[in-house]
Image (cartoon, rainbow, N blue to C red; front, side, top):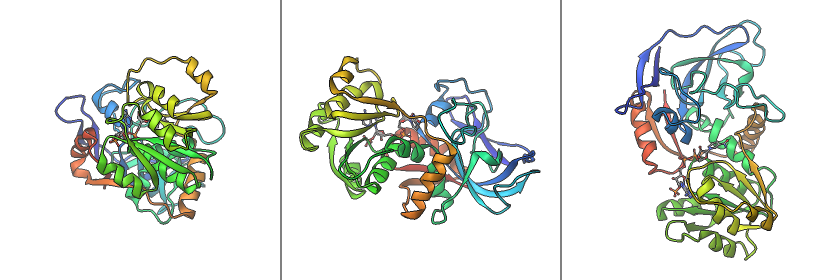
Length: 329
Ligand SMILES: NC(=O)c1ccc[n+]([C@@H]2O[C@H](COP(=O)([O-])OP(=O)(O)OC[C@H]3O[C@@H](n4cnc5c(N)ncnc54)[C@H](OP(=O)(O)O)[C@@H]3O)[C@@H](O)[C@H]2O)c1
């Protein structure tokens, strides 16, 4: 079968190789991968800057969807022909967070391959109305956004930062829950698209470096009830300006580095800071039920053929698009 592995070189982020099709062990499925999607972490994995060491030859990408091609002994949850998508934390099935475990693209081979063998407990069914390309966008970005906006409802104001994969899903889920959504973006074109997806107002965070006060003003002068924090250290100070008293910050990412922070500001705002670690398989299934019920469609920026996988990484690196970058097999 054809597979891509991390090259470790500067010229190409991933290189194609031939490997034998895996044989599913007891309890495992052999999945014929139909699509895989990129996330911010994959930029770090292929560039050798991820927080954990990535061994040479590792197959990247946590997010994929495909068809069950064969099953090992004792499999009960799925049959040959079923459509499945990956769980980001393969060993976190339900309940409270149990630790990072072995992750795709880092400690175990990922989904940028024609076939993968995975334990049946680590995958979920694909919502019926979605294509494989759409389903492949769900495991990391969508589930992270789902966890980050958990509990919001009508009457709440949610702020999403930028127009990346997580933020666009957070916008969609918060709107589904009936919340008002405000957004920031560096791009007037993407701001228009965020408005079309349901953002009431978009603040340009480059032209308005003090965007926290601007968001606060737009949120009736009292601030946002929940902020999906993808900037991290470099943006959380502005987020505290944008946050309502007693509001929540879901800490998701650290795309903006720097920004010396006085932690006492959390106390002055009475703010709750909650870290997000994607979600469990049962969270993924609950999210998929809602996606299915509302026939929500992921926002896909571009789809690349498998043969052009290195181009997908180069395109994603530039960050020019909005929504998910997908590789179709
Ligand atoms: N904790 C978790 O479980 C978890 C899971 C998934 C991702 N993450 C993390 O979450 C972050 C986002 O991931 P992603 O996959 O959505 O990334 P992505 O798709 O690469 O997001 C890129 C977008 O982020 C926006 N952005 C960058 N710097 C910004 C800033 N200073 N202020 C506001 N927006 C900014 C830009 O939007 P504009 O072009 O509109 O300006 C940019 O286009 C990453 O740090 C990732 O590692 C964490």
